[in-house]
Length: 323
Ligand code: FO1
Image (cartoon, rainbow, N blue to C red; front, side, top):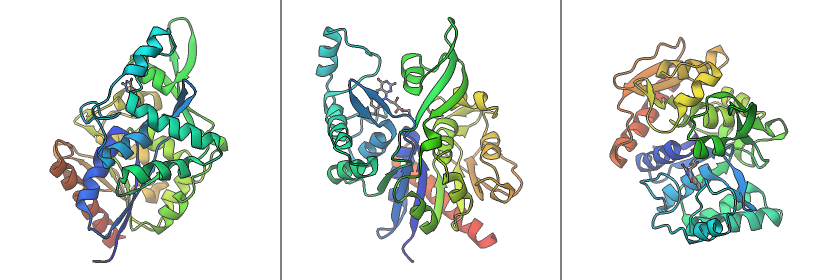
């Protein structure tokens, strides 16, 4: 079996879980490159925080708190308590003591002029995730959410919307601040042209996958990549498996369904990006030009997740053969 290079567009928690299953599903000599969303990134207390990159790195490196889905296992919160004693704002975004070390290293390296790609590679030297982690861009792209807070319409950072307000403020629009000046990070375009298979992880279609595809040049690179492109639905039944995709999709006029998301991504022959689409066993999706398979899509345990990943690779092979 030739060495296979699988490239995955991924966000945070769902993407990280899927990548760990994919790593278990591929052969020992196969390579995985994750192109990770950085639109959730923010600067707090003077530190640069990259939630999706860290969630993937910790999950595949064995440091994740799998209950929470983010942050470190065995975490303590002493610094947060001390910040609270100073009434330091913001207090709604919890930074654990262990997690803070990651942000201190990242901020120090960025301030010294290293790119986010270089910082990520350096952090992964410790964590050894077993895959290549690439930020979607080395330029800052931050997702902001246009909401009506009751005293007027304004844009707040995605994390404030998601963490502080628990996505309870109806999102009117998502704006990626800085995206027009962003470029794909080093290695991203090469990964897409060199991929044998390209997968869209079951991440949030709006704030993760669309944010990645929104980096100038990235959507075209996916559309034109020689590898078959297969996505996995993040919506099971009529609801997201995890997270708040159902709070995001209405803002972009997409139904909260497996078919709705697939039509949103679009069939490649129709100018979109999909050749194949995996939906959950009980779901259906009719998207002209997209080959659809139905398999269990609940990442209940590593074996189930590996089976999903295998089904995605199988579907990619079917797409390649029928191309
Ligand atoms: N999510 C929360 O719901 N509450 C938090 O206080 C919080 C802190 C946090 C710190 C570091 C980090 O990497 C992630 C953190 N998250 C928190 C999760 C984060 O909002 C999400 O992982 C993504 O941004 C959305 O996928």
